[in-house]
Amino acid sequence: MALPLLRFPGNRGGGREGGRGKMAAGSALCGCAMAAPKKAPAAGWGRWISTAAAPRPWRLFGAMCLLRLPRITQPLEKEEEEMAALMGQIELEKSHYSDHEIQKLEEEELLKKRKESPYDDNDEAPGRKVIMAQDLEEKWEQKLLQFKAAPRITDADKKNNRTSLNRRLDRNLMFLVKQKIGNQELWLLPQVEWQPGETLRNTAERAMSTFLGDHIQAKILGNAPYGIYKYKFPRAIRTEDNLGAKVFFFKAFLQSSDLSQAKLKEDYLWVTKDELGDYLKSEYLQKVNQFLLDL
Image (cartoon, rainbow, N blue to C red; front, side, top):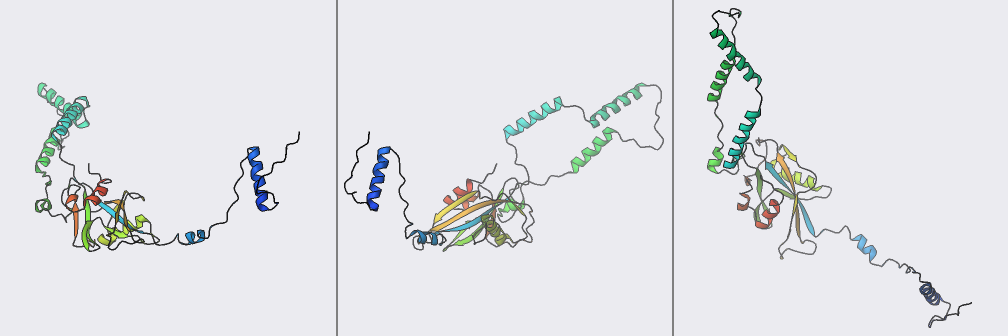
């Protein structure tokens, strides 16, 4: 049976609009979806592509968190001392004799037999000097009495000289410098602005060499930043193309404590994590504490 021909108002002509209406109606009847015709790119699309390389509204900086690692262990707490003594006693009770202890026991047994024997069975070669285990222990005791441990509290600690690396030997020390930001001089991690062609790690390395020279020996940890600090410039100097700055933090461990060849500036400090609050602003300090561990 033939279907009746359907007519739609306004689509009588055989032109482009009429054909489009018939195609849409036929598509609706058969339940099929028809893709919309593609439109030509807008006139502003080319302008959007051409402005992709426009100046960024945020200035990028790389900063280096340079740490001097502890040189000595931290003093034990009371509970730690008790646990260490207990573990030492358990290890002593379950351990085997060392070679020195076995030698000492054998010599003591031999001397005991010689004292009990009525015969002189000394078969040692004449002129030969025998070093007994007991003699070794007495020699070691004398060396121990002559040993004097270095003080945990240094002269820099007594004078509170925070420009010295020879202080707070049982803690991490962080390098801070005073930099001019706008009209203010602030204590910060050493930082410089990113330059085209650099990676952020290169920028952080340049910041370290700027304040310490090229002779500094440090081990940089990874290629990715450990943290980021973002802030806006004051309204007086803020523009659409210059909103603020983003500072990317990297970490490095100081490998050598000899900074005689380093080009240190006057305004620098080596401080612990507890002392950072005396110099850094609260928001900046919060971002630094997120990636700074001081166990």
